[in-house]
Image (cartoon, rainbow, N blue to C red; front, side, top):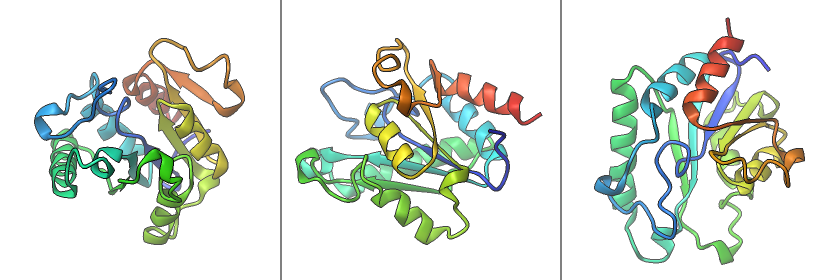
Length: 184
């Protein structure tokens, strides 16, 4: 795997770009806390890949804890900060549905990726990487024939689910360094 401009990068949000809030949701820009060097890492990765996309389940909307507008404000801030660091996120897709709804657009189902393919027809899932911090993210990637990267700070998911994981890194910063090195 040597990413280039023909490759697409899919990033999960919570736990990859921003710190996951166990048992809670990021409901506003004030709740949003970047993971270490996330802006710079995304900037570096967006220079390597043709497209950089975020795919995120956001059932806080479905639970009535936040509005679509709250989420849009968070994502506008996210994109602006990545741009300030010299990078670009081409689009952010989200699914507001509750987990129990089994929505086609909620990971691990493929809906958000298929929307991205409709928006960007050049996407080839065999030349795409899904970076996430949950097994649901890995299933999403594998079901679409993507390479998968698990961000797993304590290696809890690797042993039980190794067939779903192509690469594992402690954080996005480490994956970005690896991708940059592979591209040289």
